[in-house]
Image (cartoon, rainbow, N blue to C red):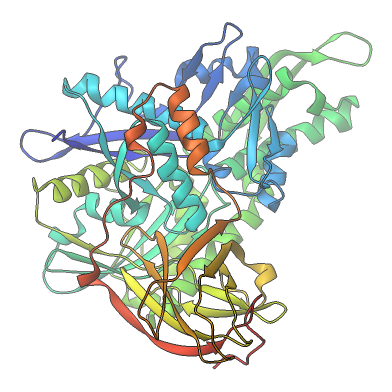
Length: 559
């Protein structure tokens, strides 16, 4: 069997790592020595696809066909608020797929392309880096995702791996991977409580963990899958755009080249301001003014200005942290150590905020850009049997439940349930000789389904004839160790399994994946294979009975 690599598929940058001959996780560098690869993909005018730094260099000359930040689109709907914001300033077009998913339109001729396929190009590049560094073929990987990613985003990430020709043997939460890489299980004796604060380019996670005897037990997790360093970039970009408009009456939004240069300058300025109190932005010949004369833009930017413009973003970091503590019944004083992960944690105001929330200075003993990939590689070693000094126990990030009545959300599996977990619900028919029933699945914490993410519609068919109430169906929801949801059902009287069709509200169908893989000349045998699930380790949630009609369950007061 080929060795298993660890991949951090990031919003801004991605990284790949593997165990060395001594069993130590090491970052695998590209041919030019780069230890991280920008998560950028560009389609050149001659039809070639370039990834990483070469794609990033296409941002000014070929902005409409250069895609970045695709992690913010994967598994998302085009009408989501943060996707709308992203689309407003993105130089490439974000369009709606037939199922409402957010896709990008790129290439010549312009073609709608799924975020999964864009992400697959990044994964394929990371795979090539690994094969070159290791000197052997690589087909298996542990890929990390934000802990707060929902079911659709996790499935979409797995599909990206399939398209890239990778067997993703495990989807691993980023904070858990980081804690493993930090070596938190090797520090001190007894049970330790730690927090992992993960603020990357496009997502934010907070996880509270207990570490004892080499076991990482996630007690609670929270976050914001639409908050990250790119939002700080956008605040700077909007500030500069507004100033240019106020002073020169020039709207840059229609000038994709000028916008690309300004965006690059905003990101560079943010990086400089993480270590300096001020920096200078100099962009000669940025555009032409209203008289046709070239506009040279020069501006001194201070950290204080950026902090004032991004105060609302800092505020959004607090609620998930406080909620995660409340879910565990712990206080900030109970947390012994706070680990920082993600490039945006270099920002001084973020570090100050973390210290104010938890009452202690956070640890900064690892490279925040590499620690997640190193943790993924360490866990890959555990899965392959090359290491056995740690075990991970994770939890569900959000409630999963069903729609009852017009819009009520009833939780079946509550958030922060230990994984793997299984929940059963009994449903009874409400009409004579009822042949099928349909249930809508949602994920979220809002009491109204309108505030939650619709996962799909479960149709239970081939029910035996009988009077109303005489036929009962047991619906079983199982979430495995990767937070991937599986739905099964059986009719209780005969013991036979009923047919179950899950009609997802988004994502790629298996046919679409086959088509993409065939187009990329990948092995079709890799499509649709998920890891086997071990029933012996599944915890059960107590069952309850809900009457069921041909449409959705009738309204019922929650317990």
